Each structure stands twice: as C-alpha cells, then as structure tokens.
Amino acid sequence: LSQRIRAAVDKLRGRGRISEADLKATLREIRMSLLEADVNFEVAKNFVNRVQEKTLGQAVLESLTPAEQILTVVYEELVQMLGGEAKQPVLKNEGNLWFMVGLQGSGKTTTTGKLAQFYKSKGRRPLLVAADTQRPAAREQLRILGEKIGVPVLEVADNERPETTRTRLQQHLTFDYRDLVIVDTAGRLQIDEALMDELAQLKHVLGPSETLLVVDSMTGQEALNVSKTFDERIGVSGLILTKLDGDARGGAALSARHVTGKPIYFAGVSEKLEGLEPFYPDRLAQRILGMGDLQTLLEKAKQAELEAPQKDLKEITLEDLITQMRQMRKMGSFTEILGMIPGMSRMLPAGFSVDEKQVNRMEAIVLSMTPKERRDPRILNASRRKRIAAGSGTSVQEVNRLIKTFEDAKQMLKTLAKQQQRGGRGLFRP
Ligand code: GDP
Ligand code: MG
Image (cartoon, rainbow, N blue to C red; front, side, top):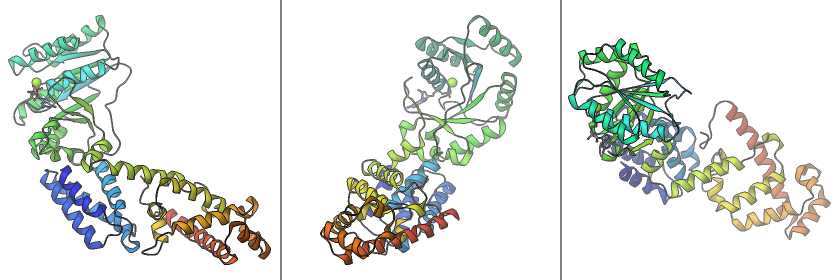
C-alpha cells in the first residue's frame, strides 16, 4: 500500500503546478492502490471522492496551487479514514470490566495478555478471567500468560452459569483488589448462533464497561463482515486489530473503522506480549505516505497557519506584514511559502512568483517607516514618502506601489474573511 500511494504522489512532487488531468490520474492511482491493499471498495471510493472534492472545492486548480497541497489533503483524509483522533478504551478509576470477543484464532487470548501487561506497566492492577471453556487448552494458555506477567487468572469452570461466574468474580475482588478485569471468551472459526447467544448472555450478566472485538487483519474483507455481525449480535465498543505485522491485506482492517463506525484502540504487531501498540491514525497515515518530506511539509503548513495573522483581518498593518515576511523568510522560499498560507493561493494570479530581491526592498521600505506610519499608512503624505524612499534606497514610485499593494491585499483579505465566514475552509485547516 505504502509503495504505490507513495509512487503516485511522488509523480506530483517535483512539479510546481498540476493540471486537473494530473490530479485525476493521481487519484486513480491512489484508488487502485487502496483496492489492491484490500481496502473496502466503498471506503476507497469515498476516500478518493473526498480528496477530489476538497481539492477542487478549494479552487486549487484554478489558481494552480503546488502539488504538496494535494498530498496534505490525501494525508488528512487518510487520517480521517483511519479514525481521526486516536482513541483509547474508557478507563475509570475502578470497576473496569472489559469483555474480549472475536473469532477463534483472531488473537483474543494473546491480546488479553498483552493488555494486562500494557496496563500493569501503567500502574493498574489487572485480573484476567478465562471464560473460554470451549477449547480445553484455552484456560491453560491464559493461565500461563498470567504467570508470565504476574497477574492472577480466574478460571471459569465447565458449564458454569454466567451468574455463578459473576458471583465468583465478585468474591475474588473482595479479597484481592483489582481495578481492571479482562474477560477472555471463546470464539469459533465462523460466526455461530449458539455461541453468539452464550456470549450475549455472559455479557449481559457481567455488564462490561468495554466490549473489545479482536479482529485478525489477515482475514481481509471477511474481517469487516465479522465485525459487523459481532456488533449487531453482541454490541462492540471498540476494535483491536491483530497481526498487522503480517501486512499485505491489512487494508481491509484499515477500513474497519469506517465500515463499523467503531474506534480502533490497539494494533497487534507481533506474537510477543510486547507486541501491542495504541492505534494512532495520524502516525499510521504518515507511515503509509512515507515520511521524510511529508513531515516537513506538515510542519511548514502548520507553521504558516500559526503565523498567519491571528487578529481581525481588518486591522492588519504594515508592521504585521514585515513580521510575517521575516518569519517566512526563515522557513524557505517566499513563493513556496506564500502558496501554503490558507486562502493565499486564491489571491495570487496563476504563475505568480516572488522576486526575493523585491522582497528585500519591500522590507527596507517598511523598515524606513516610523511605527506610526506602519500602523496607519493613510498619514503617508508626499514628503513622508520621499523620506522613506531616500531612507530605504528605493524610489517614491516603489514606495507608492508597496502601499497600493498593501491596501489591495487588505481589501482582498476582507473579502476572503467574509467568504470564510460563509463556510469556506482553508486547505490547511483541520
Ligand atoms: P484466540 O483464539 O482468539 O484466543 O487467538 P490466540 O490469542 O490464541 O492467537 C492465535 C494465534 O495468533 C497465536 O499463534 C498468536 O501467537 C497469534 N497472534 C495473536 N496476535 C498476533 C499479532 O498481533 N501478530 C502476530 N504475528 N501473531 C499474533
Ligand atoms: Mg483464545
């Protein structure tokens, strides 16, 4: 997945401008690579449509904005597809009971152990409950994990009624204080009506605070059907994707968030107890797109936004202009940066580029003004303009042009502000 998306985007990277045809071709490539990685068809279609809508809607093509803007949109949408903000299961001070469900072999028991280790290392006191009475070795598997981690394991007896399990659990907790109980349950190879009923019953009696569905990401699209069925029959609050280290068909699982609407809390990345990672949509998206210059780009974009005028646009002064110019100069080529400022691309004519020498002269002019003049250019009469031209080693015409440009820009910013109030979104707004 990474390689193909990266290749598609790489084709755009060298270019300053891109045409609508370029964009379409790139989006086609991205859609193909998503499908090839087994991302759900609807999700892939949706993804590409949104990237297209977002880029076209922002007048990127009319104003021919740099290709990096598309990459940023692709990244943002990828993060959205993966769930947006990273989410963790709800963890109260005490009384947490997590119910693990999933098909046989999905990694429930292993993940139960991993979670116990993860939260123990964070100062929690977990208790494991071995409720998988279907397979003879299942309880033993959990008992061994518990011993390894140093966490007690309560074993459910064969044919034990859910009410009895609840009572035994409560008894255990009265003499051994625990703030996180994780219940490992049985799974079948396929969705099985009888087992679903049993699980639903046990869940009902135990009343868990989280029901975590463990999904084997190697099972491709089937993983999505399984997730939906479990959610319908038992009710699921979050997902844990296992075997993401196996890669290849990981795309299906990556669509799980979108298809089920449930957050992905963790990813299993090895058979070992340490092989569990909180799921961060943004980090994964970065990994998929290949970092390096993407990181730099995102930082630049963020920086540009941070340093964009925060105050009321009507009050922007020449002083702001010079502050901006200096901050931007630190960041790279002026032309490149201008294109990254939200809304700026709309204001610049096609093929616009900044002569860096010109920028220096503009700066010199502003520096030759008194602070009062910078704040209110309206007081700049003929003699003041002459003084400024002399002081900055420029001509009165240049001073006039700068002031005119500034007044025009101010006017445009006002218009832009109105547009944004009506619901327009800058490319780099989250
Ligand atoms: P259960 O039947 O759902 O309880 O599944 P198990 O916990 O017994 O796991 C089934 C197999 O998957 C075992 O061999 C585990 O070692 C393996 N497994 C579980 N999670 C991961 C993972 O994240 N990565 C890898 N590579 N293997 C895993
Ligand atoms: Mg098991």
